[in-house]
Length: 331
Image 1: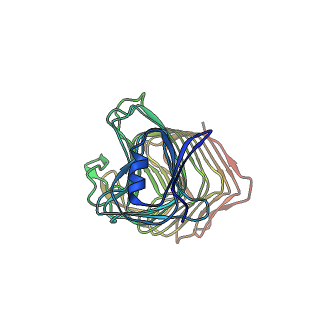
Image 2: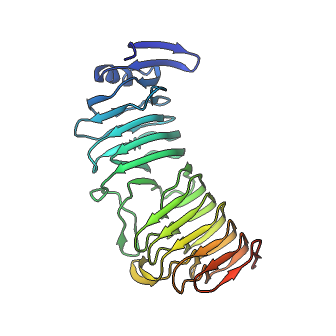
Image 3: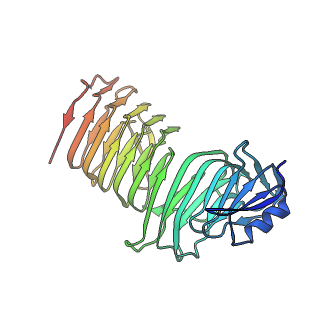
């Protein structure tokens, strides 16, 4: 056990916590900028991090906070949560944000394990912000009771275990993000998105990245792979800007049912699909396109792409193939 201490560092005051009472005291003190958890704590009430505050585990271990029946940690602005496990009931929120602040600043989740959902919403007074997520492990979560559900084409979509959603109708509200790999469906406007870990999905119709409505101006991804019939790797149904996939797109599945604009349709598990109404200024795939399902082509294009470049070739069990370095462009 580390001795309770309050230390003044160049970056602000750090408080080392060994009890629930000390944690409550630290979160209520605006002079504290860094709260370091030295050991596992049980029966923790909901806590809110003031603007500029960091919650982290001690460098020698990853402590566990077990919350007492409610939600977990509420973020405000310019917060970081690092090297810690946050445990609530699966239907509760392990991490969420306060929407009464005008700016999220930069919110960072790094090396965080949760039982419970992570929900980050831009709504209310929020006008801008940047989100960074690295090494987030959601062990279990049940989002079925969530009230906030994207709605389009007569369908309300369930939130995911991890939800990052710009709910503001004002196009001047700008939320940027740098996120580890998650299956991603977009319903809003994204200026810039960088995903530095693989996106891998399992299940019927479980697409890797999908512009369902809204748009994205610039996106960069690591590797996308899906496992399941009808599970398209990347599906573009709206005009987008520039997308890059650094290590390719792969699918492992044949044709199967998938929900498209509120209607259940039979889709092939195509690696890259540009649907009618979809278009792109530029798409780069470094690492190739691969579809490993019966009678599934690696690419389908029903909308315009100003520039399409594929390095690493493309292949499928349907017999389509091309050598590494293939480049295709269309204006």
